[in-house]
Length: 98
Length: 254
Length: 199
Image 1: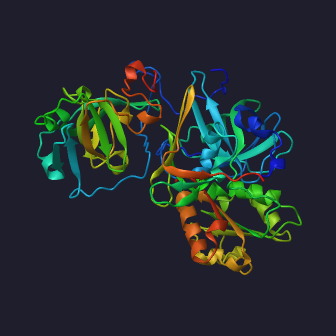
Image 2: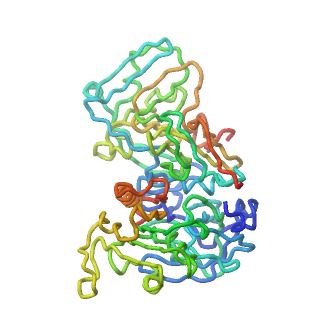
Image 3: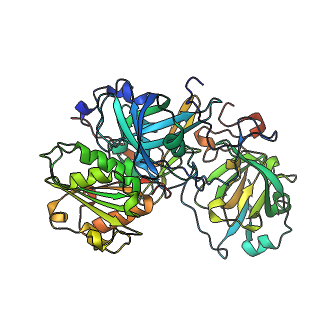
């Protein structure tokens, strides 16, 4: 992981992946969601959240299916809330510790 | 999850807390390692990262993710930061953050791009530029009697190699192989470097003992284009996609 | 703000009095996107306007080029806190595009190539306040910045100025767009700092 920022392409470029979602999602979930496997409502492909194509972090983080580029999840952090949309997923399989 | 590795539990991972700069080591002309002190550090797995947040006096904030580059020593953790031209966070961290001053830190986070010492099998690490940082954390965490590790490190030119001395020493250890791929300018044949400079090729990742049959877990980290290319080479060579783990960062990050 | 990192100011320049609250000047033109950059060949490009009655109007690229163009010079304000002053554009006023469209709608939901949407009151597209812009600073609008054509509504936060504009759906009720569904303000007036829902 490295600074995603530069003078040419500041805070909103592509070129990230779902690993970067670990911190923002840790505000919401008690377990690490980047290891969970999500199923795309559009194409049906299953992908670990860490492997999503991610755009952002501003104005929000957008995680897209590595198979079909459909939006799988979105996260916006406002001063007093986290807005989370998982509507592009039909399911999210979260591995349990046992 | 390796529960034992995160003894601080979830609340400790979630919170933003101060990380005080204890030491800064210049690694290359454009990369520096920051040694940070974080109270009650819960421990971390090699490959995990932290989010660092800088806050200006008017409330403006900027947040970026950086890989942890070494195992923790108590409350001391290390990140290596590649200075991005005009990058407002990386340049501040490399040049301006004063010893004793603090940024806010959240982490450790990320459970996907991690190496767990108990996991079986050899490990093939493929780094592009500063993508070497989380892979270095894995190499440094490898016990002397650990599984075989091989690092293939693609970088523009010899001067850009981060951790050069330590990597060369590690590469002489039993069970560790370190190989450089220079994309612009090599060390020259006089130094025993016979590979002409150029982008990563299939031959660079094809070595005896590291093929698909040996079932290494492959960790690829670098700029997006590099990661796509390396992952494609590995998959085409027959490596199981389930054992290829990737982490990408911005196109300017190399 | 309770925690400050001493000496950190960010890559920003000072206010010169023309900035809305909480904004900072930038010299470059940051690229923000929510997805991959669409590449739309001009011979396939189309702009559509659909009314609440279901009537559909379309313009090809050649038809858009045949319409009278304006060359507005405007300040733009991104919700991520950068502003850019005196940007120059060339494009067709929405007054021209909507001149022959009959509608009773009060709102517009703007659709982009690539799936992005944003909502705004129809009156904010009219009376010389909005354009379909296809040149920036004298050059064709680069795909990263929304080319071949983007909406330009400079009096609202710049996420309303949809890149890769494809269609305008005229609707009777305000319908949240891509960011508005997820906490961003339905109107987005930078001078009232309407960044998020409830601001």
